[in-house]
Image (cartoon, rainbow, N blue to C red; front, side, top):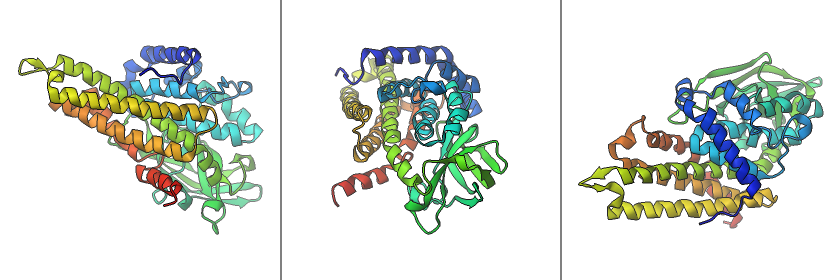
Length: 381
């Protein structure tokens, strides 16, 4: 089915991203997986490509695309190369950047945004804690006033880009008497005294995306490090989570679609009992189901992307897109592994790595169970 969400301008941009990735990134994915991080020169090259400044105003060195469909097209191309690549870069340009653009003081914007756009600086977002994953209102990290400054104490875990980030948006409790109404957001310079990183976490999948624990031991933050209003951080996060979730849905479908296409090619070439594996009726019917699932999911995600570009995407519809595409992706990739037989279980095969990479999509950006809770509440249940 033809897709109508993108215009010629979006497709030209997509082609430029595709060519850039094929030329400078795809040949090095194995290297990044071994090192458990994406090389800094890739970030700078992505900046030169205009990939990192899509949401940044021109006065701060960005492209000011003003159209979420450019973000989505870029994430589709990134996910087709490696899900981890899409995870790391999209956290920077699609998740963190809007917080800084919308909420930071002017001096903070001047200090950070040009380097966000150029790829000189890598960013991360620190929401998750050992006791506060999907339950963001349960944040234990604290920020206490000391004159005009703030003193930050606590820790975060499972932070994508955490090992290499130069700056982190951190959610901290500023009012111990409140839950969701007592949280504020801070833009934390990773070079400040008291900011420490744990080891690179040893994940099941997505090794290219460096993930780490972060620790804050009496980190002194200036007054202008706060993002938005004091005690309004939870509201700011809730306002921006739909973009993070539709972005996750874009990545889920694009990643699964690419691996499914490669699997179809494999079943055409692989022979068993004198015939191509894909020609067996069971496998033919299965592949027909998988292709249909991907195209149906793609249609819903495209509608969500169009709605978000128009400023109309609701948190409930974003939750639907996020959980459904995570579920579909994992189902499709599990079948792709099976269709590869024993080779599908070998790490040297891309399908095995993709299968491992995808599992976290049912957990992050709000677990699938939390997404269903959001949808269920909307049904007045």
